[in-house]
Length: 303
Image: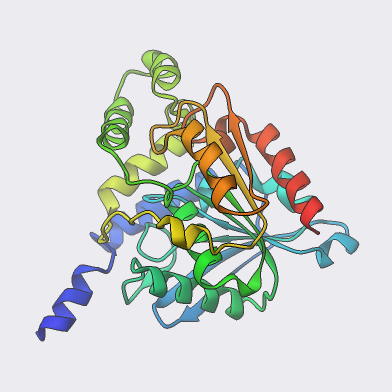
């Protein structure tokens, strides 16, 4: 195999087997069932593979013409993670939830997208394939890096960006990886201990059986093949002119919340930053009603 082909293959995520892929899909479907039912699913062909997208929509015909929301999930997960948000968001406007290639989900990756320009091209091609010229883009964790990168490199289709405890603002430190591994081990704890561990670790996954099963199955079923993304330098952040809303968990271990809440509005004109108390890395899960309301208010102000 040529060296370039071998390098490309090493950068492409994959399922360990068809059987584990099917087990993961079953676990995902149980999580999807906790949120709004999808109106449709579709596959979008891009230069980097096939992107699977779930579409949700308001019942009111007039609201279907409003600027849609596009949701980009975090690493090691899929669009099922948005189950606490799809009902409220899609009652107000159309919603598209993307399975990012390179993470477990129903997308099929054929080329790497972790390089910033490739990531921006992939997301732009996906939006174009969906026929979307103007969207409110929302990203959580690694999805936040993808959204922030898009606002810097390919902002043409973006009405706004919302970042939920995102990557891309500072280098991922050891404390975050320790939290990830501790949370994973905690999924094996006896059921009686999980609520206490969930509170201690700020990890809502532990107390939602369907979500816990999905995450545990993903670890067994899928191999992610990409490096951790690098944060955007200040000179790149300062180019962003898309309306931006940054939501940080007060006890986040991915970023230093107070530092970023002061830094981002200084670098990005008009950016709005808020810190949510009593939460860590998943404010849209454990404070779903409040975050849904804040996101919709922000989008309405942009519209």
